[in-house]
Each structure stands twice: as structure tokens, then as C-alpha cells.
Image (cartoon, rainbow, N blue to C red; front, side, top):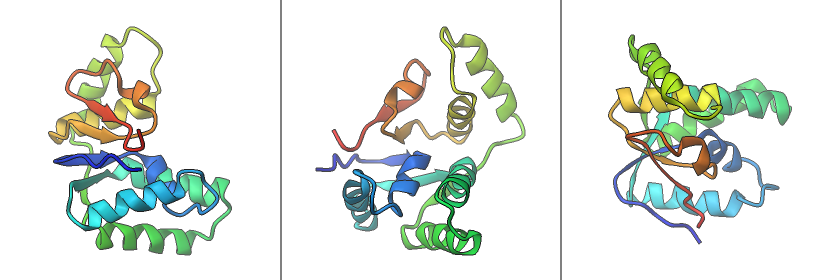
Length: 146
């Protein structure tokens, strides 16, 4: 069962990957989440970083054809009316601020994604890895499958 949030939510990269991986244990739940998005139960946001990460995983680790994957990602973004966000010219400063404040080791890519979110005034992320975003002021991470 999918916990459908209200408002604007960025979808983490792995949700894009699971939407294509029929062998994933999260495939059906991800499809339910995308249906809720299509029914406009919440607004979906994707960062350019998510697109790059998803395409990298699908092409390199899943050994998929790059043309098929780029077409798939473009179709998903269009079909589900995702808002796309990008780093601003000052996102590196936000990233450095978050990195310096971190009390534990952090994944640099998740930290940069959080900085991009904050600079675009997006405070919510749907992810299975909520711990990766815990402790980042201004970011609420929810697992949509709990």
C-alpha cells in the first residue's frame, strides 16, 4: 500500500528506476505511487540530478539501451507532469553549508540533492532512504511505502 502525501514532493532517483524494473520488490508499489501522481493526488518534482542518476543506473547497471532509457525518462516526465528543478548558481554554497554542518558522514550526492531542493524551495522528498536526509534542516523525507 502506498502512503500518498499531499503537496509538492521530489521523488528520489530509485523510484524512477523501480518504475521500470518489473523484478524489483518495489515495482508495483512504485506504479501505485505514479498512479496517485497521475490522478493529481500530489505534485511530483524531479531534479536534473535524479534524471542523470536514474539514466546512469539504467544504462550501466541494468545494461539498457541509452536511446530507450532517454525516451522512457522523457515520456515519464511528460506523462506525469513532473516539475523539473536544477541547481542554481549558488547551490554549491548551500551544499557546502550543509556539508560543514553535518555531524556524520554524508553521501555527497544526497547532500547536493538536498541543497538543490532547498534552493528551489522544495522541502519534501519521497525516498526509501529517509535516513540519508535526516538531520537536514528544511527537508522532510518520507517513505511512501510505509
